Image (cartoon, rainbow over all chains, first blue to last red; front, side):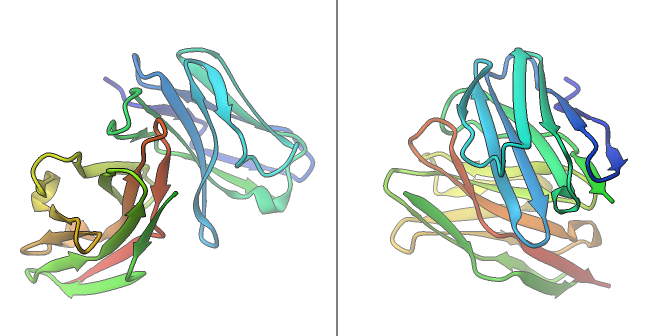
Amino acid sequence: DAGVIQSPRHEVTEMGQEVTLRCKPISGHDYLFWYRQTMMRGLELLIYFNNNVPIDDSGMPEDRFSAKMPNASFSTLKIQPSEPRDSAVYFCASSFSTNNSPLHFGNGTRLTVT
Amino acid sequence: AQSVTQLDSHVSVSEGTPVLLRCNYSSSYSPSLFWYVQHPNKGLQLLLKYTSAATLVKGINGFEAEFKKSETSFHLTKPSAHMSDAAEYFCVVSGNAGNMLTFGGGTRLMVKP
């Protein structure tokens, strides 16, 4: 299995531009999570899906952030418009639906907004 | 409600000496507990997990952790540190509500030659 695949690995954009981050979870996993990691705040859960349905988006910082999961093998996290304070590493993770099932993380997308 | 406290933000050891990374948790449920490692520019990788079976859990790369309910602790240990162990380590608790995980703040392990 290739693991969780995220693209792009690095994204540099100017303030005000739209950014789309992509994630392919591990086949068969029915939970998908989006996290953001910064030095100041550590790891923050933004949103998670179960069977492609958003369950909890209370971690999404503002309306500028949106996430979709159109099917079991693909999810996007969009920021529009982007701001410098959105600069961070964004991780996607997936797992099976048991409470002792570990998360499998992608290698992340490092976003820099200038 | 659940929470995780990693007692040290940084730990420095010499190569070949023991490693101890401390973690305390609180949970209203019988928790599942995990340790993850994050190497630079990488995602988090599972080291080991506790799921109410044996209290001493062995993981990858020679790490192990002991679940102590009376102390609400789940400390991570390794008998002999290797340079490749230098990374950030996260203690994580999973409660009863689906796959909701709570991450500790992380401990950065430095290994000196």
